Image (tube, rainbow, N blue to C red; front, side, top):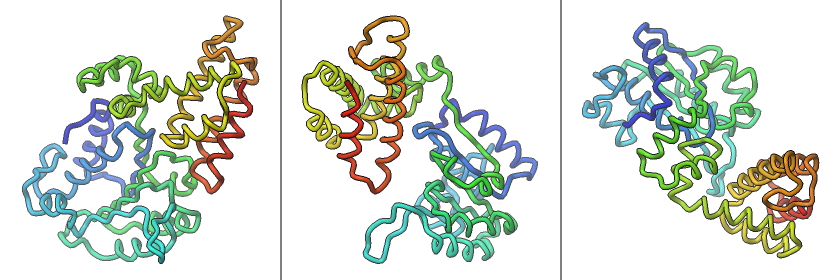
Length: 311
């Protein structure tokens, strides 16, 4: 598996602990989406369960590696969103899933080595599930490793976070990110990186899916609304039809750029009538709205309320 350059330091530290036989029983692997957390964990788990790894890398051809590739390795337990009784996928990880996991981890490893449980996304555990996991974290079985993957680790209780060794991915510096994007063949890498807020993984994915065009559309929509052209409801419908959370991300960026311009100029690029303080409030409202899209509230009403405040 190809390693991303900003993984190198974390990988080296983890392998050093493995060589000293000092691996933790619980890892919390976290950081912004797009930085390759899941690829990092897959690479690590493959090496951990391999019969003859080299420098932590799986050989890829032993029996255990073949079982992993087939998704049938008995010592890897993967836990994510389950199904409700009516067959609909849940939006959270529930307590019964954690209880079943604890029972499974109490059993011995099938191959006599490590037994690994991967919870992804761990920040989707509800309160009861989190409480049930605490006992397993407090009383780990020998050669059992829990790996929690989370884009938003702050949603996990402190009691869980404090019992895990934390591996947190941060944005690489701009030069390294641009170099990687150019190696990946991303066109207009600086614009893609700016759109993704400095996140090279997101920049690569967004450039391929046309997100830069959506970013421009969002700015045009906001400029039109500020000028009294267009209807908020039409904008709401268009945004909801195509990546609403991403469009709100771009709206927050646009508001931030408008704030910067207001500090030095009378008119920003969007010609908003809002002053710097009001723009700051709107910027915060955009981020709250993006977060609220995850919940049960009607997305169209959330967006309409937000855009009604823009002028």
